[in-house]
Length: 132
Image 1 (cartoon, rainbow, N blue to C red):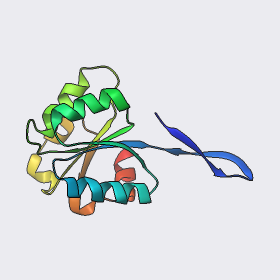
Image 2 (image 1 turned 90 degrees about the vertical axis):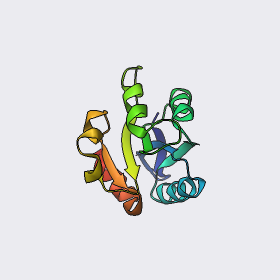
Image 3 (image 1 turned 180 degrees about the vertical axis):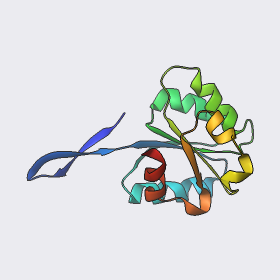
Image 4 (image 1 turned 45 degrees about the horizontal axis):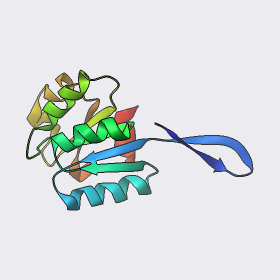
């Protein structure tokens, strides 16, 4: 679900805006991530606080991108990504954590995620870099 927004009313071209679902068990991180990504042109369509809620939200909201915390209270982000892989069309998954990607070894790619952005480095530019 890519929203098309007129880039300029005098010019007839459109800018594609990626929709994002943010999944993290900390409300403060979800709020910060939403503010950062919306300021950088993404459309945040929803938030979830755990894996089960994330799975339901993905099917309901059909985001283009799933920003998914590795550590959730009910299941980890790797399990969520793997579960989505077998259930029809899925968003592009970008994992995030306060830890470094190297701490997770090959799990990031094995679960079907496109990549990883550390929470401390989250920005629209960092997310775009993973999505390319």
